[in-house]
Length: 194
Image 1 (cartoon, rainbow, N blue to C red):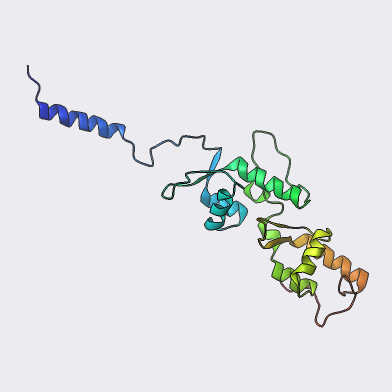
Image 2 (cartoon, rainbow, N blue to C red; image 1 turned 90 degrees about the horizontal axis):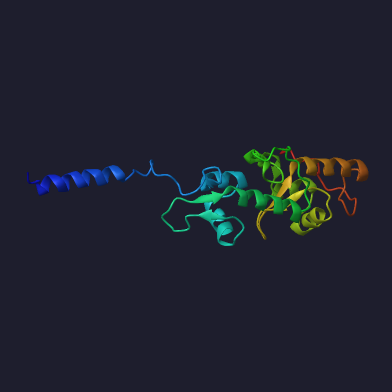
């Protein structure tokens, strides 16, 4: 019995279509728990996608899919390591809860302090009664309150609880004046943003 070539070709095409998976069916070439998507990485670090790209390009974090049109995946451990380097570089204590080796920290526990407990440099300057950022950086470097920069020359992220503790201690020590001169500024009360 002769086989119809048209039927054979149609059967081969149908078989080939069954082998080709739709994008949502395709398996990723790495363990799902080892990588996270770029959106989640942006949320953990509190940055936009372009900043995440620059961090990856400079080697601060590792990601897969560097081609422009691909779906980006960030190696989770590179974010954990990056946050640990931030703690060490800025001499910040590790306040994360202890975990067993098989568990991960919550996303909000990875940074030195939670984004919800962060104050911008502008708010801190206003609360400190300072005009120049260099005076605030000097206080940070002296360890008066906790702060870090995610990237060099980036904005300072200041710990709200440590800044409040510093302001409270300074008010009781100098009567609310400037940390170096002790002089009072007009309208120096604590910022209403706290």
